Structures are given as C-alpha cells and as structure tokens.
Image (cartoon, rainbow, N blue to C red; front, top):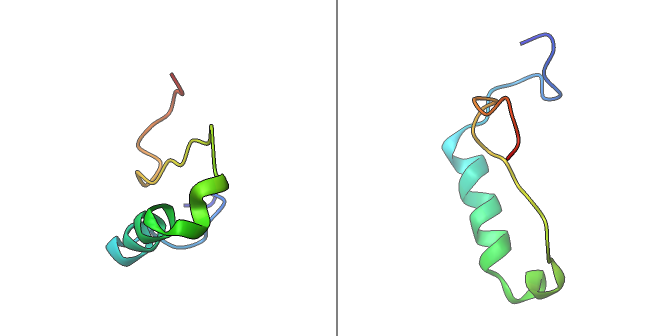
Length: 46
C-alpha cells in the first residue's frame, strides 16, 4: 500500500458516496470524467 495515493483501503461507503454524488443534480456539469474505484485492481486504462 505504500505506492498508493490513498493510505487506506477504499471501503463500500466510499464507493456509495461517489455514486450518490454522481446521481445528484449538482453533478450535472460533470462530463467526460473517469472515476476508478476498484481498489487499484485496474492497472491499465482503456
């Protein structure tokens, strides 16, 4: 975990907060973004 940006594990409530944020009306201006919340399992972006 030393090479990760976050010094703690991403937990289900963290993912839920992101989902709720993106579902909210305030996020209507968020476009063309990529949010990866897989606990660094994705090593290559496609």
